Length: 289
Image (cartoon, rainbow, N blue to C red; front, side, top):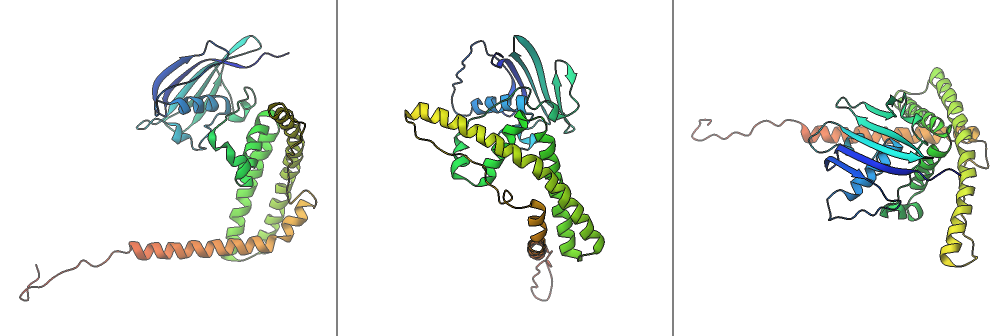
């Protein structure tokens, strides 16, 4: 049976409020204590970033950089299956981010995900139950990106196609429909739906696995045989996704036109507020000052 992954050492350089700090973790269970503002949560965020290539609380790499600096570096040593591995996560001053494993630069950040799975538990996790579906979907995406090798590439492609589709809808809303542009939209929709058909089955399958685990722990903690239910739901489960998306195209275009109109109204309002005004002048006894 594989041994548990352990973090043995971590050094933070210019990471949030840590200018140059090193920690050695020699025990199986570690408690972190300290006054408010000393960097306890930032230390946890650094561990998350080392394993997941980005922070837990923000997707913006610059938010991880110590104030007044241009980059950061994390050096960690992890042990698994009686083997020690060194990891370096570096954000260069140019904005380029690198991940190094045992002295070798990995070609892509995605090549690192799943090697050292990490789970972050924070007070705002209550949003997974009480908040919008978006937070639950992001949680599931982050989990599956570490568990299923093909999930992250498909998710990246899904988001890229979504951005391209939204950009094309804005262009159609502004300049009108053409046969060529509608043909491009058809191709984007087909490619977008193809990624959905790769992502949704994995979400369904792993939601069932999570449901089993959640029930197991709930019954043990609560001391009851009562079952709770965790399922993945989507408007696209019972219909053909491509047909649904194409049927909603007119609505999507109407939404794009509405957003474009609001943007232009805000732009005109801003231009009026920022327009230069003629300087005031006063005249006394027929002479200007």
